[in-house]
Length: 141
Image (cartoon, rainbow, N blue to C red):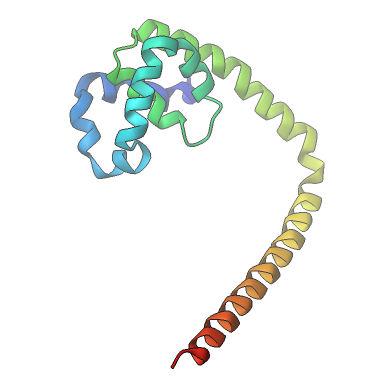
């Protein structure tokens, strides 16, 4: 039930306050007008599939569930599909966490190594950009 609570709140806000909520600054940060129109059009054709998929897509979940309320997807349908998606996704997430828990330290070490290489590449890129900018500035009269 804890997993579904926030989803239900988002649906409820969209359903009861509808379009007014889209004027809120925090909502527009997550749900741009273009994204809202895309989601509304998609809900007309694929509402249940969107709810199921949105549960598993980071960055789309909040916007999709809010739009489900705005698009007036029936609550019982929303709840059934969201609960079904949670019954698939949540245990799978816990299974992956259990499976790879003993490798967390190695993953962090690998991430730190990659971060160092990325930082080096970024610094070299900045140095090359500055050198080119200075060289172009020197040539100009």
